[in-house]
Image 1: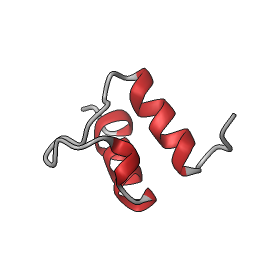
Image 2 (image 1 turned 180 degrees about the vertical axis):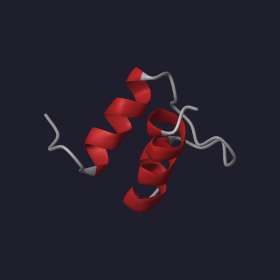
Image 3 (image 1 turned 60 degrees about the vertical axis):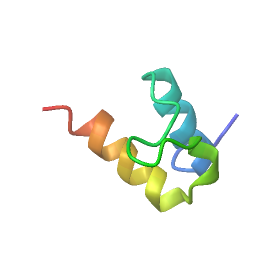
Length: 49
């Protein structure tokens, strides 16, 4: 179980949405720092408009 707002939580939420790799870098999400994963989360999950 990951705490809400932690790196593991962001990765888990992105994987639930079907995003397993970085959209541009094409590497696994686990290799990136938390602030990069958080930006991907906000861009693709929160701001889906």
